[in-house]
Length: 249
Image (cartoon, rainbow, N blue to C red):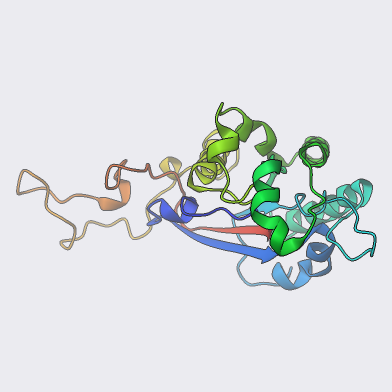
């Protein structure tokens, strides 16, 4: 899933380091094969939060040649379970959010991608099945999960505005994903909290180099602005190294 234009890195990140990493065409099988390389257990610093998305490519119907991203449902579930176990073992403070498979616009997908990729063996029904499996697994393992299948479909015009090509998310689609992630961060009962309002500011001491307010006397603490350029609220945490681990469909 490619999240374009509007994502967590576009929110003012004076309080967090965001690492976005998508692997083109990957499925849960390939992710599991490379998991130790991407998230080594012996790393000096471990991320505070890891957001994981796999499922869209896995859900594609098998190709007659056997050479496709398809992963059978039960194997997908086992792969995601092993990924969650590994990530949980990184540190006591590493938190995890799984994103379920979002819906697709099948008509738009065939119109825009068939010439390049040939007949596309991807359906909304399969996306729904893998989405439900991911959510059920997360419930069993006590892993935070976001139901993107339902979140995108809450918009009455989701088919028209949420995709660039029927699969990859547009600006509007990305806004929905970011909103859902920020909601989890805000409401999770994690200790320490990863909601930016609950975290101390790095280098919080007063500085003579901060902007002067309208009263021509008071310094403005930019790191605590609730609104930057009128477009976004700060919703991230101080010193939280956040990694996104996903396929780019």
